[in-house]
Length: 185
Image 1 (cartoon, rainbow, N blue to C red):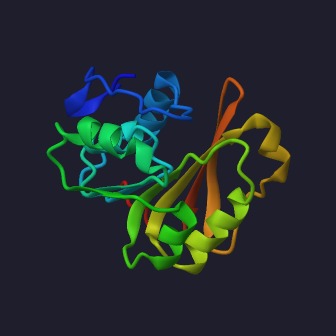
Image 2: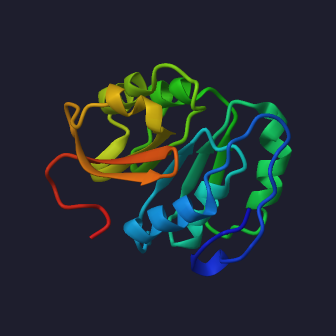
């Protein structure tokens, strides 16, 4: 895998051992093209895998970037991948739902890429709302399989659907918190 844009463009990222489904280069490039310059934004990468998405965010100016990965076997690889990243970064080795329920941080952008077979994806977005971990005007982005499309609703209590993108058999939904100005403006 490689970083597709920003100051770390073309840097290689290695895949950790174990089960991983890395976000496709094309999908990441498209998503970060939509997001644009992330200077001044904090970024949370849930289900980090290799850390590639968090590195893409840092490459485009996000600072700090936080990564959550439950599989401790991926720690060494993620840390190697993060070695060249100059922005503030922190890896949390824990379950994503537990992190959502216990963090005191608020993020400009939260990216979720849970295992496609994982149950409870919608409930995770509800927990993000309930625990108020996204800033006003901030974004929550979730990557999921096309066959789950019928399960999703357009709006939650505080999260409003901004965009849906399809990449092969993958879907990405971008939700915005509240009616206030976008954190990316």
